[in-house]
Image (cartoon, rainbow, N blue to C red; front, side, top):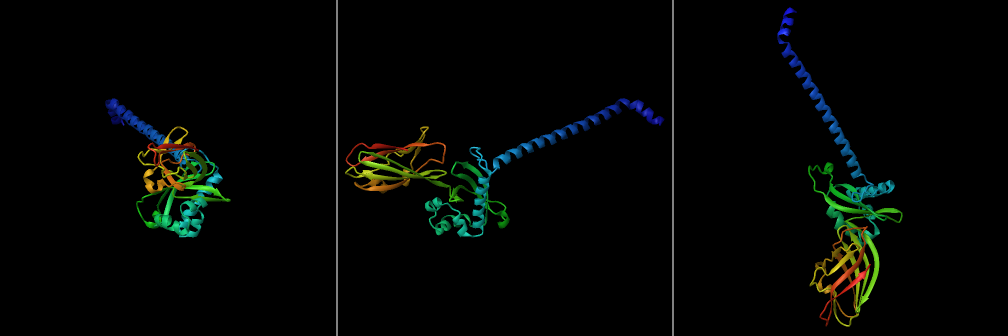
Length: 304
């Protein structure tokens, strides 16, 4: 015991330095551990809240608008049923889930659906991830990423196919419009000028563009070229903010644009306007119209 006391007296300063250093190191470690745990917890909590809000089926990713949970459940269910039917090769029931408008526009027969959609997408069993993208009073649009069923195929990686499914309420049932087709809107706006009558009958809305069905009647007494194609920006939509959306004139043949006197020709013209339900189109401008025998071309504007 006396030896220990003598050693302590000789090394007392060094002893307490070591002890205090050990205590400081232990305290620092505890502080750092507590900070790390709290910081990780906060990040995890923040991430969970954000992810839950982002992926919640009844919130629009684009606008943040919320839809009724019952409507959301029905919409999600019809998408799930569509995939279940397609994966089980139940073509009848899958086709029956399509809206009347979608069938008329894209798949008039079940064979059209099989050839143009089913055989192209469901080459194997598919899974999907869907998010509510845009919602209006008449349609809920979901962005759908279609992927391989990894459990069924054993694949380690996958390439996704992106599509937009529109869910509408039709005759007491929820129906689907696929292939990014949203629906049709009747317009029936007519303008007559210099022997030319233009009737904007309707438009077909897709996520990336719109197609307008237009009747052009030529009563000028001579041949009419509805657009010379000399100016590719001469035919366009104009919205309420003054923005212009140009027609894809390259997709229309010169023969389609030539109209003999006394003839009414139906045209389908695509414009590069994506789906914007809150912004209205005010007018369509048809420029570079050539009437045979006249040097100057003219414009006709149709208010919508």
